[in-house]
Structure formats: structure tokens, C-alpha cells
Length: 172
Image 1 (cartoon, helix red, strand yellow):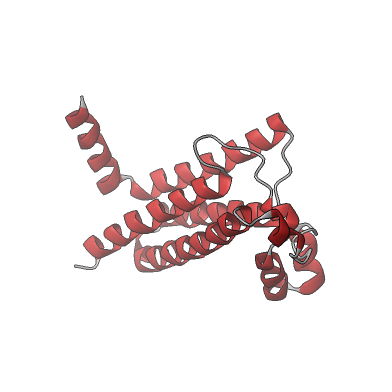
Image 2 (cartoon, rainbow, N blue to C red):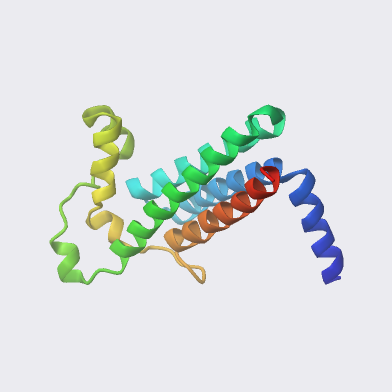
């Protein structure tokens, strides 16, 4: 049973890596949206940013599946987005582990929705403002073994490692 599963993973990794990457990233977003709607959760701007990063990974993976000539660019972009996702998820985990006194000292930089901040401050300043976090980002409202940020960190690490190995096999 385990050997069959390992063979299947190897076949998918070698032949259908990009489409599997796209489907997994899309599934992560859909699960987050479903849980938001079912449990009436309000995602903070950092959580929304994490979803956008997964969306970009899905989109780039889909392009990589259809346009094999862009393999180097696809690998670079997914590795870069994975690193960015690791940084954002780590910041969110850091904020969620602050004490209540430290949370009270946070500036409310994360209280405005992500789209509004980008529209008002511009892309880079809006993203920088969101990255500062705030009291709403420090709330942990859902947990299944790990919370959303911790699951995001795990998946971004998996994307980074898998794409790094895939890139190393392509560039040899």
C-alpha cells in the first residue's frame, strides 16, 4: 500500500507537478474561504495576503503547466512567492504569540482591509503597512492541530522545498 502511494507521488511529481501544485494551492484557498463562511470568521489583511500568495502560486503553476518554455521563470517565481509566504506566515505566527500587553501596544496598521490599504497608500506602502500587523492579526480564532498561519507556513515550506528540488533536477 505504501509503495503504491510512493509510486503515485513519484509519477505526479515527475509528470504533473505544476498541475498538482496549482490544484493544491487552489484547494487551500477554497478551504480557507469555506471555513470563513461556515464559521463566520473574519480574516485579517495578513491572512488575505497569504491567500493572494497562494493564488499567485496557483496561477503561475498553471501557466508553467501549459508553457514549458517558461520553466526557469516559473521556478524562480514560485520559489520567490514561497519565501514571501514564509515571511508573511511567520510574522502572523509571531503576532499571534504575543502577550496581551504586547498586543495592546501594537499600532492598528492592520485594521483597514487589504484592498483599501493598497488603494489608499499604494501597493508597496500598503503591503508594508499590512506587514506591521495589528491587534486584529493577533487573534487566533480557529485551530485544527495548527491555526491558519501555521498551516500556511507548513504549505509554503513544502512548496519551497518541492520547487527547489524540481528546479535542481531541471537545471542539471
